[in-house]
Length: 457
Image 1: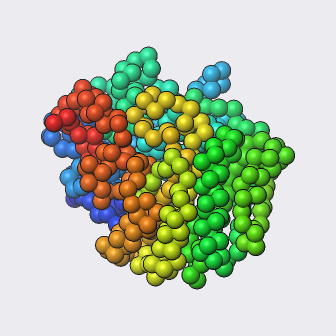
Image 2: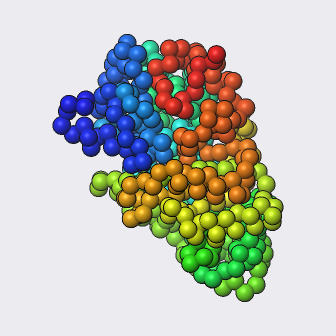
Image 3: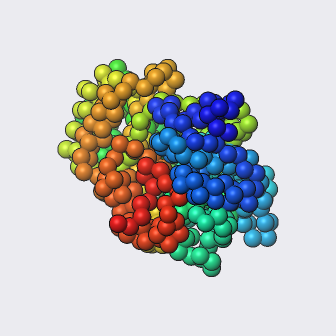
């Protein structure tokens, strides 16, 4: 499909409508061998080659992140199988999270850790992390990958695992799109937990800034104390009528009594007179997952958004002074922001931190908190983006908490970062090895986009 094809306009639309790019062509292969032919063609033409799985890249890197890319759309490659004796699931990269979660539940009551948006593609999610409400218990989605089928720059189809092409296997678990097109993942699934507790803490809609600071400090201190891995917790922040709105929610994998024991240090640290209310539900795995995700069915049309997002990892709780500065920014500048916005703070660590930092290209395992700052246009993101003022506000919202973060989550990609910034924030001390492996596996830089791993200089 090229610019002269009917349907090109729709096919080249980004999920994040803040971006409009014109690919040289969009191709829809049905087999790994067809993918290989497309890669050879792109390499011969010296055209940037990118893969599109679900198309949810925050910076539209699945469209190339620039004009003129050859887009390999994997949406026609959706086979999944589960070996009932080993629990290994082989899933082609056209599958979205909803497809994968539904299939492995239906075929053996299996589970994987992953995010909560059913329409997100498995390709980018598994390539750059894959954190969600099962993450502290079971790790990242990329931590469950035991093999990848990869079309590399010369058009070969190779297996990457600990047993074969182990250097490539290291790289694809953290930066896969820079090294090839993963056409299928092999995941080591887990028996789905038999029962879980979902929970929601809400607070007064008229919190003072000081009260909001105390609640946020309590949550951060709780995360920094590294509670049981069976507990996942996330804080949702917005501003309504000049007051910070706080909701803390999550999942506990275990019994109600064990949940009460696990959550009590957090609950007991909330300040008095803040209108705290706790609601819980008891579910099986599937009921608990869909209570947060909604239906896993992805057969309908995907929605879109106009947005700009940033992220921060922290290995400690922030100080009262830092949180106070942040809350003041929210209630002052945030109340008159040019965009709608929210912040999510995931309690991080647990099983993610059990894996050595150098075991995979994914670099950030020591964090205890993962912040996502998300600004979007009016009409629920369907109005045009407001321009630079929205980016400036979101940068200010982030910097008011931490002006010099040490790490960020590569699935919450920020295309405004300089090369020095994104290389440090997303890949940390792994950049040198990633660049050497780029030279080994993609010496002519076939797989390139604005934040792809560069060849060594």
